[in-house]
Length: 453
Image 1 (cartoon, rainbow, N blue to C red):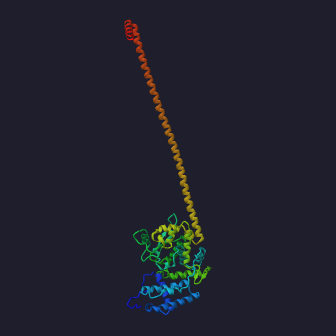
Image 2 (cartoon, one colour; image 1 turned 90 degrees about the vertical axis):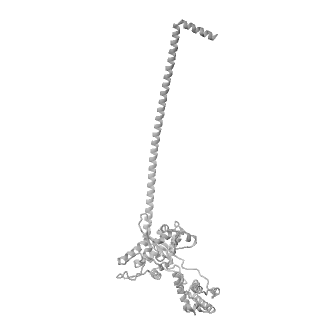
Protein backbone atom coordinates (compact mmCIF):
# COMPACT_ATOMS: atom_id res chain seq x y z
CA UNK A 1 0.00 0.00 0.00
CA UNK A 2 1.44 3.33 -1.01
CA UNK A 3 1.88 6.03 1.61
CA UNK A 4 3.70 8.61 -0.57
CA UNK A 5 0.62 10.79 -0.76
CA UNK A 6 0.11 10.78 3.01
CA UNK A 7 2.08 12.55 5.70
CA UNK A 8 3.81 10.08 8.02
CA UNK A 9 2.84 10.27 11.70
CA UNK A 10 5.77 9.36 13.92
CA UNK A 11 5.62 8.25 17.55
CA UNK A 12 7.23 11.54 18.62
CA UNK A 13 4.36 13.46 17.01
CA UNK A 14 1.63 11.35 18.61
CA UNK A 15 -0.37 12.17 21.74
CA UNK A 16 1.06 9.25 23.66
CA UNK A 17 2.43 9.78 27.15
CA UNK A 18 6.12 10.63 27.28
CA UNK A 19 6.97 7.35 28.99
CA UNK A 20 5.08 5.41 26.30
CA UNK A 21 6.88 7.32 23.56
CA UNK A 22 10.23 6.36 25.07
CA UNK A 23 9.22 2.71 25.42
CA UNK A 24 7.77 2.49 21.88
CA UNK A 25 10.81 4.24 20.41
CA UNK A 26 13.15 1.80 22.14
CA UNK A 27 11.23 -1.27 20.93
CA UNK A 28 11.02 0.07 17.37
CA UNK A 29 14.80 0.51 17.31
CA UNK A 30 15.19 -3.11 18.42
CA UNK A 31 12.84 -4.18 15.59
CA UNK A 32 14.80 -2.22 13.00
CA UNK A 33 18.08 -3.64 14.33
CA UNK A 34 16.98 -7.29 14.28
CA UNK A 35 14.70 -7.51 11.24
CA UNK A 36 14.90 -7.02 7.48
CA UNK A 37 13.21 -3.63 7.87
CA UNK A 38 15.59 -0.91 9.04
CA UNK A 39 13.61 2.32 9.13
CA UNK A 40 10.13 3.78 9.55
CA UNK A 41 9.95 4.67 5.87
CA UNK A 42 10.67 1.09 4.91
CA UNK A 43 8.06 -0.20 7.39
CA UNK A 44 5.35 1.98 5.87
CA UNK A 45 6.35 1.39 2.25
CA UNK A 46 6.92 -2.39 2.25
CA UNK A 47 4.21 -4.49 0.53
CA UNK A 48 1.82 -6.44 2.76
CA UNK A 49 3.15 -9.92 1.92
CA UNK A 50 6.75 -8.93 2.57
CA UNK A 51 5.64 -7.18 5.78
CA UNK A 52 3.99 -10.41 6.99
CA UNK A 53 7.16 -12.35 6.28
CA UNK A 54 9.33 -9.77 8.06
CA UNK A 55 7.11 -9.84 11.15
CA UNK A 56 7.08 -13.67 11.24
CA UNK A 57 10.87 -13.73 10.96
CA UNK A 58 11.17 -11.19 13.78
CA UNK A 59 8.79 -13.28 15.91
CA UNK A 60 10.99 -16.34 15.37
CA UNK A 61 14.01 -14.28 16.44
CA UNK A 62 12.25 -13.29 19.66
CA UNK A 63 11.18 -16.88 20.32
CA UNK A 64 14.81 -17.98 20.07
CA UNK A 65 15.70 -15.42 22.75
CA UNK A 66 12.89 -16.75 24.92
CA UNK A 67 14.25 -20.29 24.48
CA UNK A 68 17.67 -19.09 25.64
CA UNK A 69 16.18 -17.31 28.70
CA UNK A 70 17.33 -14.01 27.25
CA UNK A 71 13.78 -12.65 27.00
CA UNK A 72 10.59 -13.11 29.02
CA UNK A 73 7.66 -14.75 27.18
CA UNK A 74 5.49 -11.91 28.51
CA UNK A 75 7.64 -9.39 26.63
CA UNK A 76 7.04 -10.80 23.15
CA UNK A 77 3.55 -9.20 22.65
CA UNK A 78 4.95 -5.89 23.91
CA UNK A 79 7.60 -5.92 21.17
CA UNK A 80 4.87 -5.76 18.52
CA UNK A 81 2.76 -3.03 20.14
CA UNK A 82 4.73 -0.09 18.69
CA UNK A 83 4.81 -1.74 15.26
CA UNK A 84 1.04 -2.16 15.27
CA UNK A 85 0.56 1.41 16.56
CA UNK A 86 2.68 2.95 13.80
CA UNK A 87 0.89 0.90 11.11
CA UNK A 88 -2.55 1.76 12.50
CA UNK A 89 -1.88 5.50 12.72
CA UNK A 90 -0.52 5.56 9.17
CA UNK A 91 -3.56 3.89 7.55
CA UNK A 92 -2.11 0.36 7.32
CA UNK A 93 -4.17 -1.22 10.10
CA UNK A 94 -5.60 -3.85 7.74
CA UNK A 95 -2.37 -4.74 5.90
CA UNK A 96 -1.15 -7.26 8.49
CA UNK A 97 -2.80 -10.57 9.41
CA UNK A 98 -2.24 -10.32 13.13
CA UNK A 99 -4.12 -13.42 14.24
CA UNK A 100 -1.73 -15.93 12.60
CA UNK A 101 1.20 -13.94 13.95
CA UNK A 102 -0.17 -13.77 17.49
CA UNK A 103 -0.79 -17.52 17.46
CA UNK A 104 3.01 -17.91 17.49
CA UNK A 105 3.39 -15.94 20.74
CA UNK A 106 4.55 -18.07 23.69
CA UNK A 107 2.17 -18.62 26.64
CA UNK A 108 2.39 -16.06 29.38
CA UNK A 109 4.20 -17.05 32.54
CA UNK A 110 3.51 -16.06 36.11
CA UNK A 111 5.00 -12.66 36.78
CA UNK A 112 7.75 -12.27 39.30
CA UNK A 113 8.44 -9.05 41.16
CA UNK A 114 5.48 -9.59 43.46
CA UNK A 115 7.34 -8.95 46.71
CA UNK A 116 7.61 -5.71 48.63
CA UNK A 117 10.69 -4.33 50.31
CA UNK A 118 10.56 -4.99 54.03
CA UNK A 119 11.18 -2.23 56.54
CA UNK A 120 14.42 -3.92 57.63
CA UNK A 121 15.64 -4.02 54.02
CA UNK A 122 14.89 -0.34 53.53
CA UNK A 123 16.74 0.37 56.78
CA UNK A 124 19.79 -1.47 55.44
CA UNK A 125 19.62 0.58 52.24
CA UNK A 126 19.68 3.76 54.33
CA UNK A 127 22.75 2.52 56.19
CA UNK A 128 24.59 2.24 52.85
CA UNK A 129 23.71 5.80 51.74
CA UNK A 130 26.77 8.03 51.77
CA UNK A 131 25.10 11.35 50.91
CA UNK A 132 22.19 13.26 52.39
CA UNK A 133 20.57 13.35 48.94
CA UNK A 134 20.51 9.57 48.57
CA UNK A 135 19.25 9.09 52.11
CA UNK A 136 16.49 11.65 51.52
CA UNK A 137 15.68 9.98 48.20
CA UNK A 138 15.23 6.54 49.81
CA UNK A 139 12.98 8.04 52.48
CA UNK A 140 11.07 9.93 49.79
CA UNK A 141 10.29 6.85 47.69
CA UNK A 142 9.44 4.74 50.77
CA UNK A 143 7.01 7.38 52.03
CA UNK A 144 5.09 8.41 48.90
CA UNK A 145 4.65 4.92 47.38
CA UNK A 146 4.93 6.43 43.90
CA UNK A 147 6.04 4.96 40.62
CA UNK A 148 9.58 5.65 39.44
CA UNK A 149 7.96 7.50 36.53
CA UNK A 150 7.28 10.47 38.80
CA UNK A 151 10.90 11.49 38.17
CA UNK A 152 10.07 11.99 34.48
CA UNK A 153 7.65 14.75 35.49
CA UNK A 154 8.51 18.04 37.21
CA UNK A 155 9.20 17.56 40.93
CA UNK A 156 9.75 21.12 42.12
CA UNK A 157 9.82 22.92 45.45
CA UNK A 158 6.51 24.65 44.62
CA UNK A 159 4.89 21.21 44.51
CA UNK A 160 5.43 20.72 48.27
CA UNK A 161 3.11 21.98 51.02
CA UNK A 162 3.94 21.77 54.77
CA UNK A 163 1.45 19.68 56.78
CA UNK A 164 1.03 18.93 60.49
CA UNK A 165 0.46 15.42 61.83
CA UNK A 166 0.25 16.60 65.46
CA UNK A 167 -2.24 18.58 67.52
CA UNK A 168 0.17 21.47 68.14
CA UNK A 169 0.29 22.62 64.48
CA UNK A 170 3.99 21.69 64.08
CA UNK A 171 4.66 21.40 60.34
CA UNK A 172 6.45 18.04 60.48
CA UNK A 173 5.26 16.57 57.15
CA UNK A 174 5.04 17.50 53.47
CA UNK A 175 2.33 17.01 50.90
CA UNK A 176 3.93 16.43 47.47
CA UNK A 177 2.10 17.02 44.19
CA UNK A 178 3.00 14.21 41.76
CA UNK A 179 2.56 14.28 37.97
CA UNK A 180 1.92 18.01 38.06
CA UNK A 181 1.00 19.58 34.75
CA UNK A 182 3.09 22.34 33.26
CA UNK A 183 2.78 25.41 35.47
CA UNK A 184 0.56 23.63 38.01
CA UNK A 185 1.34 24.36 41.65
CA UNK A 186 -0.14 23.32 44.98
CA UNK A 187 -2.59 26.23 45.15
CA UNK A 188 -4.01 25.46 41.70
CA UNK A 189 -4.31 21.76 42.55
CA UNK A 190 -6.24 22.56 45.75
CA UNK A 191 -8.57 24.79 43.76
CA UNK A 192 -9.18 22.08 41.18
CA UNK A 193 -9.91 19.47 43.85
CA UNK A 194 -12.39 21.75 45.62
CA UNK A 195 -14.23 22.93 42.49
CA UNK A 196 -16.95 20.93 40.75
CA UNK A 197 -16.58 22.91 37.52
CA UNK A 198 -12.86 22.30 36.91
CA UNK A 199 -11.21 19.06 35.75
CA UNK A 200 -8.81 17.84 38.43
CA UNK A 201 -6.25 16.42 35.97
CA UNK A 202 -3.84 13.50 36.37
CA UNK A 203 -1.88 14.94 39.29
CA UNK A 204 -2.46 13.67 42.82
CA UNK A 205 -1.21 14.21 46.35
CA UNK A 206 1.32 12.01 48.11
CA UNK A 207 2.80 12.64 51.56
CA UNK A 208 6.06 12.42 53.47
CA UNK A 209 6.31 11.03 56.98
CA UNK A 210 7.95 13.21 59.67
CA UNK A 211 11.05 11.01 59.30
CA UNK A 212 11.23 11.50 55.53
CA UNK A 213 10.51 15.22 55.92
CA UNK A 214 13.38 15.59 58.39
CA UNK A 215 15.91 14.07 55.99
CA UNK A 216 14.58 16.02 53.00
CA UNK A 217 14.97 19.27 54.96
CA UNK A 218 18.54 18.27 55.87
CA UNK A 219 19.29 17.72 52.18
CA UNK A 220 17.80 21.10 51.21
CA UNK A 221 19.62 22.83 54.08
CA UNK A 222 22.87 21.34 52.80
CA UNK A 223 22.19 22.76 49.34
CA UNK A 224 21.46 26.19 50.82
CA UNK A 225 24.65 26.08 52.91
CA UNK A 226 26.49 25.60 49.64
CA UNK A 227 24.87 28.90 48.55
CA UNK A 228 22.41 27.38 46.09
CA UNK A 229 19.55 29.81 45.42
CA UNK A 230 16.51 27.60 46.07
CA UNK A 231 13.09 28.88 44.97
CA UNK A 232 9.74 27.46 43.94
CA UNK A 233 11.07 26.29 40.57
CA UNK A 234 14.08 24.50 42.04
CA UNK A 235 14.01 20.68 41.76
CA UNK A 236 13.34 18.72 44.93
CA UNK A 237 16.20 16.39 43.93
CA UNK A 238 18.90 17.78 41.69
CA UNK A 239 21.95 16.47 39.89
CA UNK A 240 25.38 16.46 41.49
CA UNK A 241 27.00 19.88 41.64
CA UNK A 242 30.23 21.60 42.50
CA UNK A 243 30.28 23.46 45.82
CA UNK A 244 32.20 26.19 43.99
CA UNK A 245 29.41 26.68 41.43
CA UNK A 246 26.20 25.44 43.07
CA UNK A 247 23.91 27.47 40.80
CA UNK A 248 25.36 26.19 37.52
CA UNK A 249 23.60 23.50 35.46
CA UNK A 250 20.72 22.85 37.91
CA UNK A 251 18.78 19.84 36.60
CA UNK A 252 16.25 17.52 38.17
CA UNK A 253 17.33 13.93 38.74
CA UNK A 254 16.14 11.79 35.83
CA UNK A 255 14.33 8.49 36.11
CA UNK A 256 17.42 6.62 34.94
CA UNK A 257 19.63 8.46 37.44
CA UNK A 258 17.26 7.53 40.29
CA UNK A 259 17.24 3.91 39.10
CA UNK A 260 21.05 3.82 39.01
CA UNK A 261 21.29 5.31 42.52
CA UNK A 262 19.03 2.64 43.97
CA UNK A 263 20.78 -0.11 42.04
CA UNK A 264 24.15 0.91 43.51
CA UNK A 265 22.68 1.13 47.02
CA UNK A 266 21.04 -2.32 46.86
CA UNK A 267 24.21 -3.88 45.42
CA UNK A 268 26.14 -2.63 48.47
CA UNK A 269 23.75 -4.32 50.90
CA UNK A 270 23.43 -7.97 51.91
CA UNK A 271 19.98 -8.15 50.31
CA UNK A 272 19.62 -11.11 47.95
CA UNK A 273 16.85 -11.10 45.38
CA UNK A 274 15.72 -14.30 43.69
CA UNK A 275 15.76 -14.17 39.91
CA UNK A 276 13.03 -15.69 37.75
CA UNK A 277 14.04 -15.38 34.12
CA UNK A 278 14.79 -11.71 33.52
CA UNK A 279 13.00 -10.50 36.64
CA UNK A 280 13.70 -10.35 40.38
CA UNK A 281 11.14 -11.37 42.95
CA UNK A 282 11.42 -7.85 44.44
CA UNK A 283 11.48 -5.08 41.87
CA UNK A 284 14.07 -2.39 42.52
CA UNK A 285 11.70 0.61 42.51
CA UNK A 286 8.26 -0.95 42.52
CA UNK A 287 9.09 -2.80 45.74
CA UNK A 288 8.65 0.54 47.59
CA UNK A 289 5.22 1.00 46.05
CA UNK A 290 4.18 -2.55 47.02
CA UNK A 291 5.37 -1.91 50.59
CA UNK A 292 3.36 1.31 50.76
CA UNK A 293 0.26 -0.40 49.35
CA UNK A 294 0.55 -3.31 51.79
CA UNK A 295 0.88 -1.03 54.82
CA UNK A 296 -2.04 1.20 53.79
CA UNK A 297 -4.33 -1.75 53.07
CA UNK A 298 -3.47 -3.61 56.30
CA UNK A 299 -4.21 -0.55 58.43
CA UNK A 300 -7.87 -1.21 59.20
CA UNK A 301 -8.67 2.38 60.10
CA UNK A 302 -7.54 3.77 56.72
CA UNK A 303 -10.28 4.48 54.18
CA UNK A 304 -9.49 2.05 51.34
CA UNK A 305 -10.89 4.35 48.63
CA UNK A 306 -8.76 7.29 49.75
CA UNK A 307 -5.73 4.97 50.00
CA UNK A 308 -6.23 4.21 46.31
CA UNK A 309 -6.27 7.96 45.60
CA UNK A 310 -3.00 8.46 47.49
CA UNK A 311 -1.46 5.81 45.24
CA UNK A 312 -2.75 7.53 42.10
CA UNK A 313 -5.21 4.76 41.13
CA UNK A 314 -8.28 5.79 39.12
CA UNK A 315 -10.15 2.55 38.52
CA UNK A 316 -13.83 2.08 39.37
CA UNK A 317 -16.55 4.61 40.11
CA UNK A 318 -14.67 6.01 43.09
CA UNK A 319 -11.77 6.79 40.78
CA UNK A 320 -14.09 9.05 38.78
CA UNK A 321 -16.48 10.51 41.35
CA UNK A 322 -14.52 10.45 44.60
CA UNK A 323 -12.49 13.67 44.91
CA UNK A 324 -11.08 13.96 48.46
CA UNK A 325 -9.18 17.10 49.37
CA UNK A 326 -5.53 17.23 50.32
CA UNK A 327 -6.45 17.48 54.00
CA UNK A 328 -8.79 14.46 53.79
CA UNK A 329 -6.10 12.37 52.10
CA UNK A 330 -3.51 13.45 54.66
CA UNK A 331 -5.79 12.50 57.55
CA UNK A 332 -5.88 8.91 56.25
CA UNK A 333 -2.13 8.91 55.55
CA UNK A 334 -1.41 9.91 59.17
CA UNK A 335 -3.00 6.69 60.39
CA UNK A 336 -0.21 4.68 58.69
CA UNK A 337 2.75 6.92 59.64
CA UNK A 338 4.03 4.59 62.40
CA UNK A 339 4.13 1.60 60.00
CA UNK A 340 5.69 3.66 57.18
CA UNK A 341 8.47 4.98 59.42
CA UNK A 342 11.77 3.17 58.84
CA UNK A 343 13.90 3.83 61.92
CA UNK A 344 12.77 1.92 65.02
CA UNK A 345 13.80 4.86 67.22
CA UNK A 346 11.59 7.19 65.20
CA UNK A 347 8.74 4.68 65.43
CA UNK A 348 9.14 4.57 69.20
CA UNK A 349 9.05 8.38 69.32
CA UNK A 350 5.84 8.35 67.31
CA UNK A 351 4.34 5.66 69.54
CA UNK A 352 5.37 7.61 72.66
CA UNK A 353 3.95 10.80 71.17
CA UNK A 354 0.71 9.01 70.24
CA UNK A 355 0.46 7.56 73.75
CA UNK A 356 1.18 10.98 75.26
CA UNK A 357 -1.54 12.51 73.11
CA UNK A 358 -3.89 9.72 74.14
CA UNK A 359 -3.02 10.29 77.80
CA UNK A 360 -3.63 14.02 77.35
CA UNK A 361 -6.96 13.27 75.71
CA UNK A 362 -7.90 10.91 78.56
CA UNK A 363 -6.81 13.54 81.09
CA UNK A 364 -9.00 16.11 79.36
CA UNK A 365 -11.88 13.66 79.30
CA UNK A 366 -11.31 12.88 83.00
CA UNK A 367 -11.17 16.59 83.81
CA UNK A 368 -14.33 17.21 81.84
CA UNK A 369 -16.01 14.27 83.62
CA UNK A 370 -14.82 15.58 86.99
CA UNK A 371 -16.08 19.05 86.18
CA UNK A 372 -19.39 17.60 85.08
CA UNK A 373 -19.67 15.66 88.34
CA UNK A 374 -18.70 18.78 90.26
CA UNK A 375 -21.22 20.82 88.34
CA UNK A 376 -23.84 18.13 88.91
CA UNK A 377 -23.13 18.13 92.66
CA UNK A 378 -23.34 21.90 92.77
CA UNK A 379 -26.54 21.76 90.78
CA UNK A 380 -27.96 19.10 93.13
CA UNK A 381 -27.11 21.18 96.21
CA UNK A 382 -28.51 24.26 94.53
CA UNK A 383 -31.73 22.47 93.68
CA UNK A 384 -32.05 21.02 97.19
CA UNK A 385 -31.58 24.46 98.70
CA UNK A 386 -34.05 25.94 96.25
CA UNK A 387 -36.60 23.22 96.99
CA UNK A 388 -36.07 23.73 100.75
CA UNK A 389 -36.56 27.46 100.33
CA UNK A 390 -39.70 26.85 98.31
CA UNK A 391 -41.06 24.46 100.95
CA UNK A 392 -40.38 26.95 103.73
CA UNK A 393 -41.95 29.71 101.69
CA UNK A 394 -45.03 27.55 100.98
CA UNK A 395 -45.29 26.55 104.65
CA UNK A 396 -45.11 30.17 105.76
CA UNK A 397 -47.74 31.14 103.22
CA UNK A 398 -50.05 28.35 104.38
CA UNK A 399 -49.54 29.29 108.06
CA UNK A 400 -50.26 32.89 107.26
CA UNK A 401 -53.42 31.94 105.43
CA UNK A 402 -54.45 29.71 108.36
CA UNK A 403 -53.86 32.53 110.85
CA UNK A 404 -55.91 34.87 108.75
CA UNK A 405 -58.70 32.28 108.56
CA UNK A 406 -58.68 31.81 112.37
CA UNK A 407 -58.81 35.55 112.88
CA UNK A 408 -61.72 35.88 110.47
CA UNK A 409 -63.59 33.03 112.23
CA UNK A 410 -62.98 34.66 115.62
CA UNK A 411 -64.23 37.98 114.34
CA UNK A 412 -67.37 36.35 112.88
CA UNK A 413 -68.01 34.47 116.14
CA UNK A 414 -67.56 37.61 118.20
CA UNK A 415 -69.86 39.56 115.92
CA UNK A 416 -72.49 36.81 116.12
CA UNK A 417 -72.32 36.73 119.92
CA UNK A 418 -72.73 40.49 120.02
CA UNK A 419 -75.74 40.37 117.78
CA UNK A 420 -77.36 37.53 119.83
CA UNK A 421 -76.69 39.46 123.04
CA UNK A 422 -78.21 42.57 121.57
CA UNK A 423 -81.35 40.69 120.51
CA UNK A 424 -81.58 39.07 123.95
CA UNK A 425 -81.35 42.45 125.61
CA UNK A 426 -84.00 43.90 123.37
CA UNK A 427 -86.38 40.98 124.11
CA UNK A 428 -85.72 41.32 127.86
CA UNK A 429 -86.42 45.03 127.75
CA UNK A 430 -89.73 44.45 125.95
CA UNK A 431 -90.75 41.77 128.45
CA UNK A 432 -89.93 44.08 131.36
CA UNK A 433 -91.86 46.84 129.66
CA UNK A 434 -94.91 44.60 129.36
CA UNK A 435 -94.67 43.55 133.02
CA UNK A 436 -94.67 47.20 134.06
CA UNK A 437 -97.74 48.01 131.84
CA UNK A 438 -100.65 45.64 132.69
CA UNK A 439 -102.95 47.22 130.12
CA UNK A 440 -100.57 46.34 127.27
CA UNK A 441 -100.23 42.83 128.75
CA UNK A 442 -104.03 42.39 128.75
CA UNK A 443 -104.37 43.62 125.18
CA UNK A 444 -101.60 41.32 124.06
CA UNK A 445 -103.26 38.29 125.69
CA UNK A 446 -106.59 39.17 124.00
CA UNK A 447 -104.79 39.41 120.66
CA UNK A 448 -103.25 35.93 121.13
CA UNK A 449 -106.67 34.54 122.11
CA UNK A 450 -108.25 35.93 118.96
CA UNK A 451 -105.48 34.48 116.87
CA UNK A 452 -105.80 31.05 118.45
CA UNK A 453 -109.63 31.19 118.15
